[in-house]
Length: 320
Image (cartoon, rainbow, N blue to C red; front, top):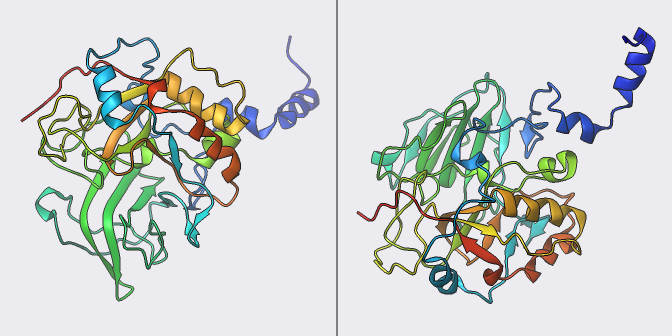
C-alpha cells in the first residue's frame, strides 16, 4: 500500500543521519580537510581493499611472522586529535573538479612518479604540520573526477608550487594495483594511502568501516604481495612481513568491553583486516586526524597485542 505523501515525507525526514549514511544516501562528499564522504565507497566494491577476509585461510608462516613483528607489542592507533600541537594522523583534503592544478617537482623518485600538475590547494594540510620533519604526506581527493593525488615529503614553494619526494595518482573508479610493477607510491608498498585510513566520518557517522586498514612495521622483507607493487627492504628473512601482507584480528577475540568507536574499528579488523603499507612503528594503525576523536577511547585498542592477529595466506608473493 502506498503511503500518503505527507506521511512519506514524515517518515523520510525522521531517518537519522546514521541510517541515511548506512543506506548509502545519494550525497556528494563534502569539501575541505578531512571531509565526510557520506558513505561513498572509495574503491570499486570488488577491489582487494574491500574484500571480506574473515574466513580466508591462515598463512603457514603466520606464527613466525607475528613473532617477528612482536607478539606482545600493542596495537597503536597512530591518529587522534593532536600530537605535539599538530593534528595527529595522516590528513587529507577533498577538492572539487575545478580546483586549480599547480606544478610539483619530484626530488627523489621522479622516475616512479606520475607527472603533475596536481590540484593542491595552497592551504592543503601537511602531515605533522608545516614545520614537520617526518613523512609530510599530502593527500588530495578530487570528488568530481574521483581521482586521488598522494605525495610524500611535500614542501610548499613560494605559495605557487610544491616539491615532493614522489607522487602517485590513483583513479578510484578502477581496481588496485594501478602502479607499474616495482614502482613505489607515497607509501613504500606502492599502494594508495587514503583507502586504508580510519576516518571519523565512517566510524562516527556511518558506524561501520567496509574496507581493510593500513598499518606499518619496523622491519619488512624484500618481497611484496599484490595489490602491493613495491618492496622496501633488503632482508630475505621469510619470517619478516612483506609489503602488502594482510592480517586480521582473530575471530574469537572479545571486543564487547571496548568503547563504541573502537568496536567499529575492531569489527573491521576481523572482517577486512589491515595491510602492511610502509616501514614505521610496529602495529601502528593509520587514521586521519579529527578534533572530535576521543583519544582515551582510541587508546583502549592498546589492549590488543600482536598475538591477537593472524596472517592471511599470501597468494602471489613476489621476492625479486
